[in-house]
Length: 326
Image (cartoon, rainbow, N blue to C red; front, side):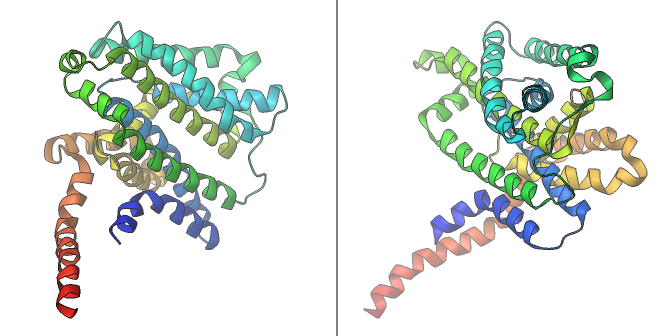
């Protein structure tokens, strides 16, 4: 029973995806679920790098755009099926992320944040300037995974992707490499002193994070059908970071909680205050930092603590009752 309950958080996105695909939900609700998974993958990849490794990169939106344009370029330029981007984009992102990791070896702190943000911004400028390749500010039209208005396939893909990420994240963080990541985050000098390959940890963490972000971009490309340089904007990166902070930076399911909450807020205000989205998300991040420093995930854990305590008491009482009955 405890194993089933322990795996429930990871299985939840897939279950939600299948349920949403099976039920006649409103198109706006389906869009909300699909985009929530897209932002969850982006925010989770940033949380993996920042919250668990201590590397404050601000290139995540640029990496998502990179994955989206790689996927779109393969479909438009070479005629490949759009789903091939699900494989090629993360591989290309892994290589690019490794290169960013090499940059991280030379700088840290604010310098790393500024350099990665500058690289992402430069990529956005390239997407606008290279209009003959990318379509410029007019955007690049790419084929969708499923043509028409049906969203069931996207919901299933989103659910599977979120579930696989959560399962993979748990395995990674529970492994020796995951513990090394957290050791580098907590005290880099001490980690180096006890024999952890700090350079290797940083480079590989960057590469894994970039691969996840690039996959998210490829999924986004196959869903929206039109790509624009606005993917690499300050507001996009701000929303991604805010989701991790609000949900709980450095917590396994914090990005999931943050993505659902903030994406629900975005969908709520889009009809009458879309221009204030960044202001609202920034305000929520500030409130979370001031009043909920460990994020909403910690609040949820405190609310569920009595239930967990009751379940533990129940598990401890079962053997006693069995022995008494025998």
